Length: 435
Ligand code: DLL
Image (cartoon, rainbow, N blue to C red; front, top):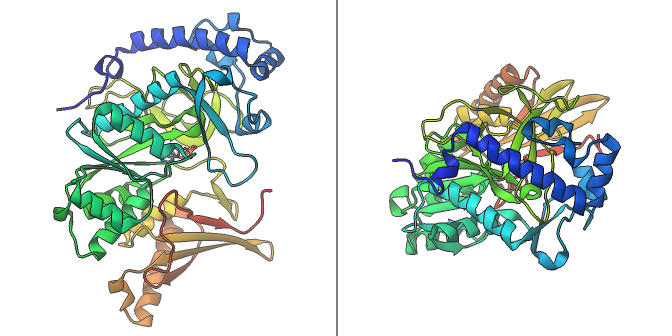
């Protein structure tokens, strides 16, 4: 039986949801225009006033907002409420330029917790569960978001933060954690450590995991599900729109439902900005229609995915997004070919390797090079040199088949690729194509 946190909203008939979005959008545009000079200027430059926005059908008239606007307006330029009404900030983990700082009123936090409560409930969570939150706590939104959602649901919450993996497993055993929340790469690492400690999924009580904050493939999902003996659910979000919980997976485990009562989603052509019809692959754009302190309109996420309104077996009517297939700014262009790291990950896992790999791109004599470092497990490692070379050859061929370009594959000894407790760094691009 499917569990809902807020059935009325999650299963709301389409026309009613559109009406709710229409009303909230009109009010939000007015709020922003009147309270944020930065927005007023952008809208004035485009010749749009709040009176032009009568429903979601007029959304396309509004200007886009990008990460560079957020940087220009740093720190307070997009704030729509007095600071005295804000109770928290979070910030992105960006390594270049200024960080993005997002502000929250207490009402914003309540709505955010509610979105995360929906995700936990959809993964089977109830007040009888023990929910171990192993996302980082701090400026990153992962820990705080799932912690808030877990409290709302009434789970016994373990605010572990990430790291200290053996202790994570010890608490998991001693306190009988049933739900684990962390990045998929950390979940894989926890699974690996569990087995190294001589334990199996039968020694723990976990039943579900809520994993997101970075791209992961279906193959990786299966790997984690096996190593921890759980069902693994995806969760999506970004600091700019509050954090995790913008979209969450249900029992169908085939894409994430977007919390449309809070966010309007569009898919655009990343090059032209043109809005694309449902079912097209393109860049995801979000408009926050309920946020008070930091309400972004038509924010370009750079995440590439597809939206679908196909009926879902879970009964929810909320629109679904596919797993992000990559980011328009993270997509590698190698020898003119578009490459998403997830394509390489799929091949590696299909061929029986663990998700421990690193991709290195460089430019030598004006030509791009692609090196893929893949870790062997102990069993693969005992192979002869010739056997290893053959494995490298067969991996090279399999990757070439998918990408159309040939990588140089290096199989490396067990435990030589750094494990991640948060977002994994999969790609090192040495070409210095960007600042
Ligand atoms: O990663 C928020 C989050 C925390 C989501 C915990 C889920 C769980 P940022 O650090 O601002 O926020 O990074 C946002 O991470 O634009 C995507 O590119 C990527 N991302 C987030 N969730 C997923 C996911 C948090 N499920 C950026 N699959 C987003 C793929 C994801 N990519």
